[in-house]
Image 1 (cartoon, one colour):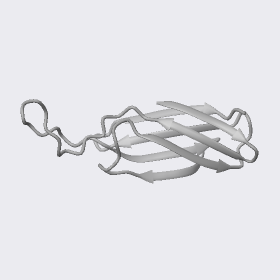
Image 2 (tube, helix red, strand yellow; image 1 turned 60 degrees about the vertical axis):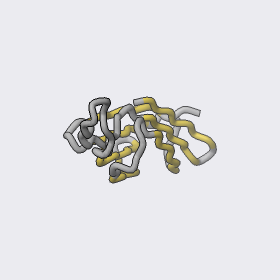
Image 3 (cartoon, helix red, strand yellow; image 1 turned 180 degrees about the vertical axis):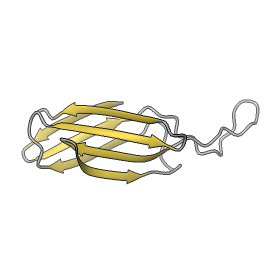
Image 4 (cartoon, rainbow, N blue to C red; image 1 turned 90 degrees about the vertical axis):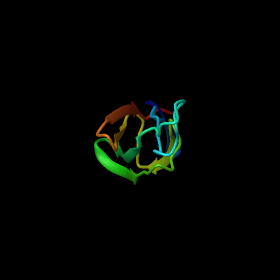
Length: 100
């Protein structure tokens, strides 16, 4: 997971790229077999361990999703963390400190 958090004025812009195949279960491999469904179901973002964003995703999100969101109330040095859980129980977490 790659992350960036930049404070401009009172608003922090957070950008995240999550490495994940995000398979819909409808695509076929080279042998004509369906590739099993595999997608991120839940994404949670926190600011200093307090939840600020929660999203439920489905199969309509592309491979290696790119996410941008804005939040108020963050200061330089605050910790923003993003975690996810997919339909197979796999998880991922990343965090970054707010910069100017």
